[in-house]
Length: 276
Image 1 (cartoon, rainbow, N blue to C red):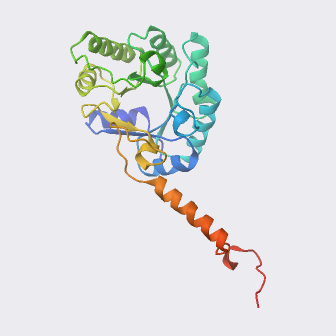
Image 2 (cartoon, rainbow, N blue to C red; image 1 turned 180 degrees about the vertical axis):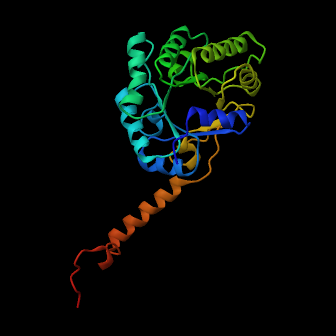
Image 3 (cartoon, rainbow, N blue to C red; image 1 turned 90 degrees about the vertical axis):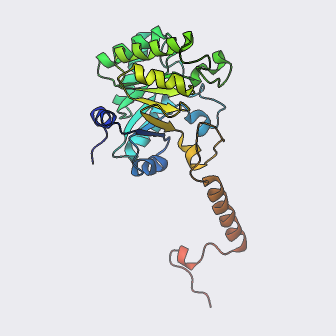
């Protein structure tokens, strides 16, 4: 099987089939996520708190995500791989922003890049326009943008003012400008369902929601939350497994067997000594 492409995504989108997207930050999980059949894998800066032990996404560097993206690419065969531009790797100037976006394709082997855009977002819209002109596919991201948590004052759900509010207008306008700049899809995070529906109806690119309700063209979740692996109980998510318990149980059993001498046995040993 060949990798999912933008054309593949648009074929599904035009048929009205929902798109599926999950995160992955390492080869073993990426291999299973890919085998499970998702359309896209995001190597997100959410690795900061889901994989690297930080409190948020802000400390994550280009080098952190390039290495993780490359490992995900090596472990997968079918899903489109999207690298996530981390905080301050873009926006300070156009040249370095475009260069950093290109590094995900050139060095890590990603198929596309995602970046966050604030409402209005002139700076990032210009970056999107230049990247797509140069052949770097860009996935947009609006609504609750984690890299701006300090400015937002925390994980505040976006659009509570109403779908037809001035803020709703601004989100729609930003989405349309990103579309004009060339994005191939748009992540809507932490947005009320009426606002997400209005945005989805206002653009002709697939919208992929996380905490954006039902009236979008696809869904994305953090794989740790889906698997119950060091996850938190977010309203926007759903836990499909409890790997915390499975992993902890396996470790406890291993510790007990080592301490009691039940492991290793002769079957786990090279050229075991015959016991009389």
